Length: 85
Image (cartoon, rainbow, N blue to C red; front, side, top):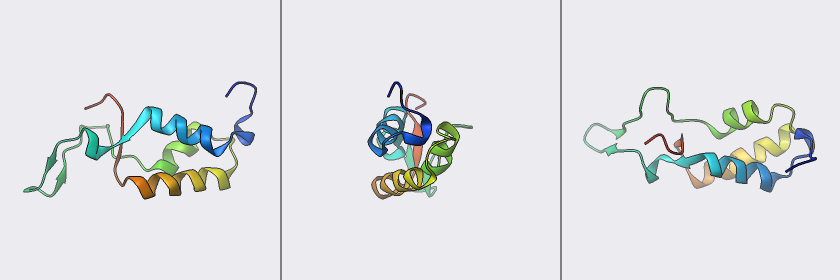
């Protein structure tokens, strides 16, 4: 990713960054079916992909960020930072 401005960052690199740092809650967060959902730690999720990407890649092409967020949302609904659970 060196020598690439945020605005020119390819979709694949943005997705790779996100998937390196975040994961679907299903892979590590305790789910309590009786209580109705995942038990998130304070300040540890869930995160919306678009919010995260806009914060990390503030100068990136908004259309590319939206496309990345749509792809991520189609593969998971509750995202958390890796290593927090």
